[in-house]
Image: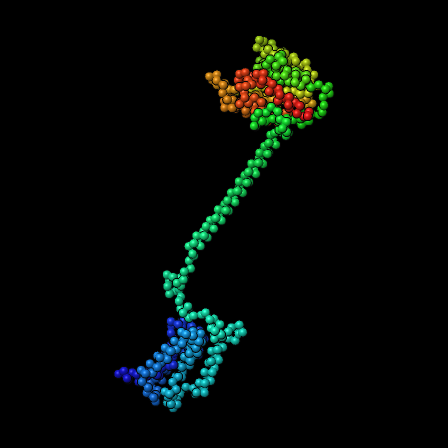
Amino acid sequence: MAKKNSEKFPLHSLPDVDFIDLDTEPMDRLYDSPPSEQDNIPEDEIFEEQSQTFEEETWEDETDPYEEAEEITSDHDSRNTFDAQAPEQSTHRFFKRKKNRKDSVEEPSFEENEPEENELEESDPQEPSPKENDFQEESFQETFQEESFPEDSNTPDASEKFEEDDSWNPQDETDSSEDDPQDPWGGEDWSLDPDLEEEEQQEESSGVKAALFRNKWHILFAAAVIAIICLVGYRILNYGVLKNLDDYDGSTGDEVFDAPFSLEAAGGTRTEDPDGVTTIVFFGNAPFADDRDSADSLANLIGASTKATIYNVSVSGSYLAADGATLSSSIAPLDAFNFYWLTTAFCLRNNDYIYQDIFQTLGDNLPPDGMEAYNTLLSIDFSTVDVIAIMYDGADYLAGHNMYSDDNDTDIQQFTGNLEAGIELIKQTYPDIRIIVMSPTYAYAVDEDGNYVSSDQYRYGNQDVLSTYVIKEYESCYRQYVTFIDNLYGTVTEDNASDYLTDNIHLNLEGRKKVAERFIYYLNYYNK
């Protein structure tokens, strides 16, 4: 039975097909060549034609099919061994075998078993002659070469391509990452070295930190520049004319709100004293009124040191802020001795009858130096006056008087408003008189038990502390371009008040001398 099958389908009747080792030859290279005309024939017709041919062919030499299979197998093994040793030649030879494989479908390669011409002509009358086969083979080879490798100077043929690429190995292309979906990198380790990865992370982190550090220092530098600009601007706006600190005398505080202004800055035009004598008029309360007839009074100490002509029109127990909006003997008669109403007495000189009525109304309540101060004020020829000095102590603070008004800078019922209203009236009437304002010295507040407490912490009524009164007074003087002397932080301060006060507010002799020293310094400030 086996023999019958072998006779019907003899092994040597199969086409000349070389075995291809799929381990060394990639599958995708089997179909690199362009399809031939025979590839376009349907598979059913090819199978039918081959089956009819195999049944009709007879072979002269009946060779044992098993021996022939062994020869073919040994020949195939030898070719595989040679291909493994020389992949370039094997690949080049592959293209030739592929071409022969195409031709072998039409003409078997075993010449010794070739059937007789008569039989072939009878079995296939349409089969072309040998000459036609040769012609078809030559045309096929030319077509194969033209379609596979077009003539182009930049495109080498297959043999040259494989000869130039010595590093190519067919095994490399068979090892594809698609075989193992869990290993997309083809078995190679493409991960970063742990040490290198850690070093890159450290460099990236250090770069971010460095950028943040630079940005932080930029912000700090910008903040410092802004702070310096604000400080300089504040000093310029609030300190007026700059002075040489080496020549500064008598100041004891770190933050001193002194603001010297010349007469010209305030709008005056006189450059020198016409009579050669300095004349000073003192307005205020206790600092100038205490011991007014004594040589140790503040006004007399200043006069003795400067050789100036002095007029003391201060009134003890008076205030800077007025209780009433108008001068009246029936509402607030003591307002007649505050700063603004006294300036109207010598600048306007139109309210003498009111003062006389007030004196009668007050009677025994009239301040002891009130009548004297008023009469002295009317006797002065202010055309010869050089300086008006103004100093009210912390009595307004202790009484809880109103401090200032944002709506009206010259409200006479305010501590600062009364001062500014009087200064404006003097400047309008006597523009060539220089005005010097001295702030209150330090004064202790007195609590409900009669104990001395800090005036920087204790408040009366709904007003602020003593230092706020002084700061607001400084601002008023700055607006009016008149000299301001800060006694609260520059003369008698909270630190040395016990050495210069007799009680919580009044100056002793040493305190007066200290205040006089500071006043004389700024009196002569522009005469150096």
